[in-house]
Image 1 (cartoon, helix red, strand yellow):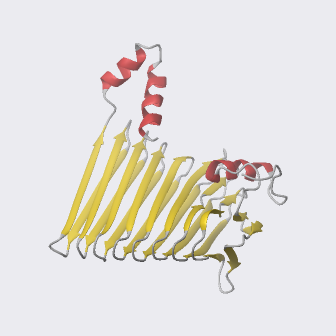
Image 2 (image 1 turned 135 degrees about the vertical axis):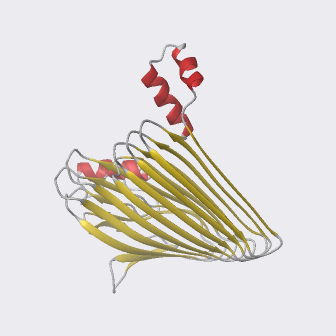
Length: 314
């Protein structure tokens, strides 16, 4: 982080949301684009990272020069106006031989009766030999009766020998989400996706991943850890298509509690004799002996349960 001032056009509630979804409590180093209540609130480019508003639709183009190393770009979205609905289109062009961190995420504070909704389409074009870490967090707050809804779509195109690590987190306050992710990998490309998800109340969450391993020696690892509490519902879809000599693995590990419902639907398809694909899925409740063990250390049953859940989602 750099500087010690906050964004001039962002209020205190929005700053709290920014801290939750992007770790921002002050102006970050590097490039950034902050979107608040449907408008651009702050923006800064760097010598190697350019951010341009789209002319034909709502959204931005982020262009990262070839060879850019150890730089970051933050593009979070926050909504604090009840009843606001928006759709944004963001495209990321990462040049060859780059090594960058991209922090996105969406936070919605809804204190009113109208539903608040943010949908987005993020497209990534990752150049040859480039390395990208992408962090996307969802967070909701507010005691209004209006829902907090987020339906993000992500499309990834990876060139030869590129690497991308995606961290997708949703831990609190989102009433409904449908996350769709599709990736196409060229030769030698490697993709790692880590999802962490917690639902409670009557919340609904569906995650759908489709990975096409098109190039020789491409590989993918899709890992989901989730906890469903109370009357919430989760659906996990993971499809990996091996279209060349490649390696693919998907894993869903979920804890189910109370009256929740979880569906895990893994699918693997080998279209090449040298495609090595594995899928795993496990759903179960917290073992009673785990809670008893922690209770002998002085925790209440509720505290023991919370500690197990927190540890599982780390």
